[in-house]
Image (cartoon, each protein chain N blue to C red):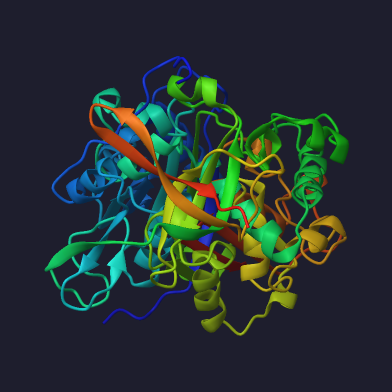
Length: 141
Length: 385
């Protein structure tokens, strides 16, 4: 592990999001899913956007995805990112449902970088204190 | 029922502006308000509506502003913190006058440089855990608008072959306008594409020169009915049409289609309520919090085809002799962050014929202004008398 200039920022789970971070701790990518109509949505919300049901659960997804877009961040807006520059912020689209996307990082970048449309798979970055962050890496053909 | 009123812009005002003015939000707000009243030739008692749009952490109260200015009684007020910057104040004010809720409405946007970009400073206690919606962005190092801006630009480049030089061409064209606006612009040195490409990346492909320039500022415009406008000091210009729009997803990074975000919905509404067409519009003020935003508006408003804003801009079409002269005051990249109000002010000056040295070769009879992108935005069409 590289020396940190500041501890990594950790999420503060709440009633709505606890399942996501519990899943990440167990190295599972969990996405909120409506118990009535089966629609996934992310980030978690209080009601199903598709059918307005309040009966919401969560489902484990495959962890595969494609890069919808990305950018290489060259400036540390928080000290915990100072030793990570440049780092890749990406939006990854999941195959489970059209338009189902999450904001994440692509890590372990290949030498020629990442491109829009690249296949990626989830991996988990340890944050300490029994927490982990779902991030993605490029799947080599 | 009150009949629907035709709405005029009759007063324009700026406060003292600068990187650090040392002036508080209320002082800046009072300065721009007084300047707009003087421009219009109206007194506080003539005004019966005040609308302010603020950042929640830089809140400016509409009713307090009215009291500060000696306005005796408000028939309408609104304090917006949700949405498309100055455009929210303008469209609330326009709707108030159009509906008869206010006869003369002062609309305001006041911003302090410090903390305006949000980001890390905006979430108290984040070191102990990032709460709320930011728990899905900040742990990934996504803090500010620059981070989603880079994502939007990359998607457009991947889909349509837009080049970094195209964004640069927009920045360069704007700088050339800024050079002709030395009293308002913070930047009056010539800019070349090479300078642009040498500017550092903030969130590649977004460079420093793609970003607006944070300042302390307050901007004010006064809207009133056509009847009242006829008796005032300035030649009135008129609001012809307007539109707001949102997207299914309220998170800027997760909108359904980054290359066709809310401006496409807002622009569709604007054109559905007017007989004018893009070819009738001779000047544009398109929000440039980041250069790509103005370019998405060029596509959304139909000045060029979908995905074609890069070559369109690089061919010089936003310059004075181009298809749609854009941001003729220099835009927020140069005159600083007025958060959308400068576009209303500059387009009004071009239509009034008071743009001085920046007057376009052909005086336009219609202009369009816009604000924001992504999950929410708005636009308005303004016509000369």
